[in-house]
Image (cartoon, rainbow, N blue to C red; front, side):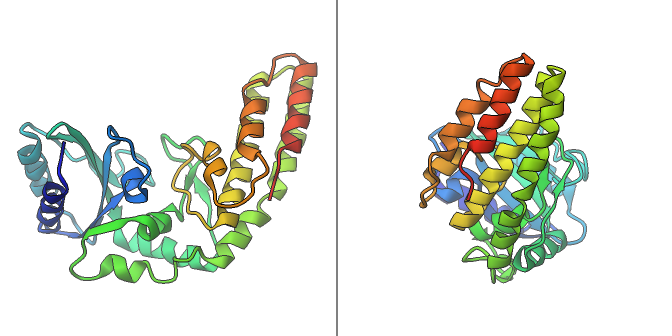
Length: 266
């Protein structure tokens, strides 16, 4: 198991690599919701060109074997690149973040602007202002120039304009479900499932925003509503019930769509 002292040493060595300005602990470990077997997520915030050869060498030294940090764009347009390491029996993920791009999204979050973008591994789409959520929720391990401290200004508490924008987006739920009704007529269970799942996630985003909680990806988004410090009126359970029993005939699919319309919304 990688100790906290060893993790902080890794962060200091990462910050010594050319182009890396700051390193932050993210994911479930930053939120305090991790399991003993959870990965350690490290955000590497860089400016300009990163010395990737130095990163490769550092990764190899920590793992005891060859590791290649992915080239820019290898993981898609919204995850710059990174590497998956196993260090002292612990999975450690290095995720590179372009500090300039992060700064843009932090400002958009403060203004209540956001969008979802196509990105491998993100079925709903990558939420661009999740960069701001990472900054707000992350634990800086190395931030000698106060880059992360500056980016975090105005992100805690959760920006009110962003909360309002997420709630306003709820109009899309019925729009999606109206389309699902057409798919149900033809027993298109796949299309209905896509519409219903997307509707559930839009509602879940709204619940998180109402509670002032950042969302970083779709994983755990719907069930996570049940843990919010507000009365969500059983949304998570209701949504799970609908999504797990959609059916396949037109009649079953229409009933499921009606049930999804009825799940609690903010």
